[in-house]
Amino acid sequence: MAEYPIHEYDVLVVGAGGAGLRAAIEAANAGCKTGVITKSLLGKAHTVMAEGGMAAAMGNVDDRDNWRVHFADTMRGGQYLNHCRMAELHAKEAPARVYELEAWGAIFDRTPDGRILQRNFGGHRYPRLAHVGDRTGLEMIRTLQDHAIHQGIDVYAEHTIVILLMDGNRCVGAFGYDRERGRFKIFHAKAVVLATGGVGRAFQVTSNSWEYTADGQALAYNAGAALLDMEFVQFHPTGMVWPPSVKGILVTEGVRGEGGVLRNKDGKRFMFDDIPDNYKSSTADNPEEGWRYTQGDKSARRPPELLTRDHVARCITREVKAGRGSPHGGVFLDIAWIKEKIPNSIEHIKKKLPSMYHQFKQLADLDITKEPMEVGPTTHYIMGGIQVDGDTQMSSVDGLFAAGECAAGLHGANRLGGNSLSDLLVFGKRAGEYAAKFAKERWAGKLDQAQVDDAAKIALAPFERGAAGENPFAVQSELQNAMQGLVGIVRLENEMQQAIEKVSALRARAANAGITGHREYNTGWHTAIDLDNMLSISEIIALAAIERKESRGGHFRDDYPDKSAEWAKYNLRVTKGGDGRPKVERVPVVPLTDEMKLVIEENK
Image (cartoon, rainbow, N blue to C red; front, side, top):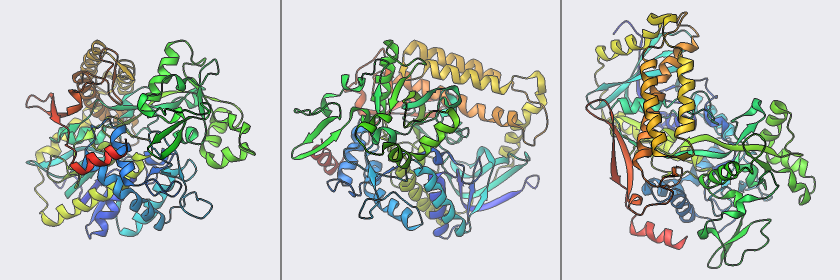
């Protein structure tokens, strides 16, 4: 084992976004020696691209809000496939996590009397998102990073993990390399927390940054952990489709939360054509502003642009397919129209949406205070991921924990906007807390030289094939095209079968990937290693989507367009079978307690 340096830790965290940093802080505070591995640079995690805010029922803008309403909204948004215990913990603990972040130095937008300001977001009954303009994720990472560096945490920037190291069914560390020099390293740990984010780079059009290549999901799956809800991929309704310089870049839901409206090429607000019955009031008023959602003596105005993301994405797709879309295959998102209602609207937009204004002005010469944006659905988030215990965040593999987007459970069939950032804080803390507890109770476990040698040999194989091998970038591009076109927003069984066949063919090509040059700064090598993760998880997404023969949340099938009462009883779990192939099986949804049922009934 002397061939590679060995780094010893009580808790090893893979990923330095919101969930990873929060887990590391908690583990270090518990007295554990903690290491953090990040594929990018510290402070550059994908979390910084989260714009709209973090959902927490603090009631600062509307005092009718509380954890019970937030819980009910989350369950309803997830079509009741959520892990209800996780939804309960999230709703109860999110306010404390936000106030904790504030105590650590986060600077939030404020109400006139000095409280943390909260804004409307899709699927949330009341204004619930604590925010910092449209740069909330950046402020979260800045705050967590500043706090973490004082905890004595070791950070390994620009490192990629190739495999998790196992001692039987116990995870005892990880094996990877530094991306700058290409040198292998062994990380020996009593507990490992995966916080690697999503899978968006397996799709052609995505808001996700380059790191999102399904690493955590694939590492856990290959180590024997179960995955859950992998068919549920969220396509954010508003990603830029034009001009090409900004294609796929996310337009935060905060634009709609601040009054932005969606129009087709005829200028019509088409979202009014498809408002679900359970959202309609018996006495709608002034439809140009929104309908009034009523429940008993409670009432809230809701514009149709703030329906759940899956619904808005499908409505946009419907307009485009019907020939009513914008010139470049999207629709128009217009925030400039508020000049009719708000004095000094230009300054208002710049203040509330500074990143949106400056980003599109600089990158696309588009002034959102004066003209609409052309937007369309973009691959944004995966609700599925590593199956974890609702309280501890431990996977089905001993000593392996997961939090954030790479973990499943909280969001069910569809995530509400803003729940992702509070998810990172609530369950990042819990993962770090229970990983530390596990580490204190267990010895380190044994390292297996054969695992390390095999992983190193596989990782270096592309160099041996050289220029005669397959181009890894070409393989990735073809995978992205296949997933976007065949396992996208609207799905059909025959198309998804084609996708599986395509993935199989691409896997054979990826196994023959070849690269030239040396190990330092070799992006071709990095892509060749990433390919196996993306191919494995893409196949699992397609298999799970074929198995679920209904439409629900982020999973819409044209051949099964309705919800099924039978399928409402099950989640889909995927494990690696004895033959090395994915095994998809139904598992009963975690049942609601009597108290949870009452909360949902109270907040219908």
